[in-house]
Length: 109
Image (cartoon, rainbow, N blue to C red; front, side, top):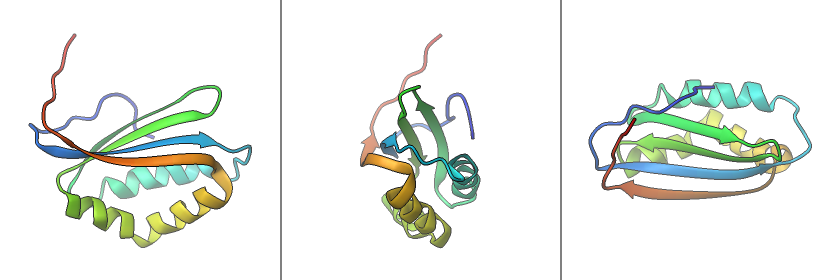
């Protein structure tokens, strides 16, 4: 999985914020996560991703996209839909997804 900061363009662009609490089931979770980042990076409009998870299983993944249409196409991707379904059934005790328009961004030391 990608680590570090995503390199995004000047705003505006969109952020999909996926907050999750893992279940006790691992069964291929890491490999699927890696595959989803690889696949997302191939999608038109993908700008980058940042992801963290704590020891208790709470994770936040933020993916950045150029448009709402690019986000909708990613959500509808067949392989991504399999990962979504498997996540609901096995990997997540709870999750929430939010979509936001990024209007400003700043960097620092």
